[in-house]
Image 1 (cartoon, rainbow, N blue to C red):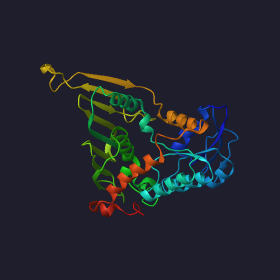
Image 2: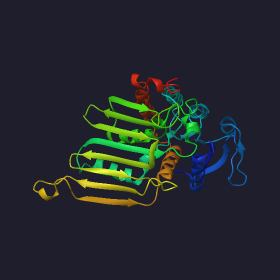
Image 3: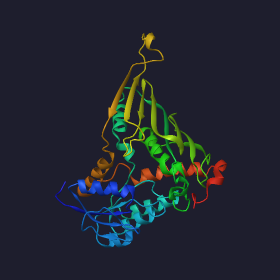
Image 4: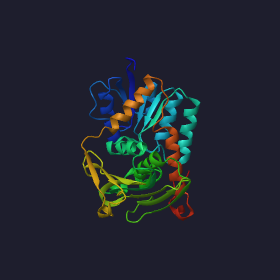
Length: 345
């Protein structure tokens, strides 16, 4: 990479905006040029200007914009920046609905010189990257099945959150959290031809889903099952991969609160012929992870693409479009029609 330093800005200074500020400060090729948030921003280094709109921030002259806004703002901020030749790193979800993402993809195609990345950081958790290396290496054979559970407890004020307002968030727990697991399904198995799902407001008094069950299958016979829930009461992340010669189980996430538990990767091997004693209880290997490089790893790759003028190949706009197509197919199912307000516009 060159010795160039990129002027970076952050649109939206909430939880994710603070994380991205730390990423920018930690990267030698990034310099924080400003933050945009109509509510203001606290805790910034001295001298960092605060703008009341992402338009003003981009107009101040940026090389890269980190979009950490609510879902209804995200697509407009991305398109505005891309149309002005500014590289973009956007958090997920990429918008409220499929049409939002289509507008983003169209803008990117009009400006192929711009690098656009979406923050599907779960791809870069160490348990996931190790599991992907094992799958790609082929020692355990072909992937047969995927089963994912991603859930949280709604907690105090959950019903009042903007994420559960269709006009701002677009959808419920499937769009907010389950989309990460769907992205991982695609990472391990590629595209899925068949998509079916059920969503419902099972407990919380909200106009979007608090639980979603999704089933997928592709032309290679691989199947995947997702349960995304806002009524898990205990935060949970678990992805199971069944293979011809064994299985992989990723559990826990290294979060700021530690509420998802310690991140682990369990490797189990199908008993070999003659290992009758191990039938139903095969040998397993458990690995623990104590650091989470996912946030920074993705930013580093984004910067490399800009400075080396390399195409973006991971967490692309196309990836965002494909995973939103899955969400859209679930939301548009006739049996889920009563949950479509604000989702399909």
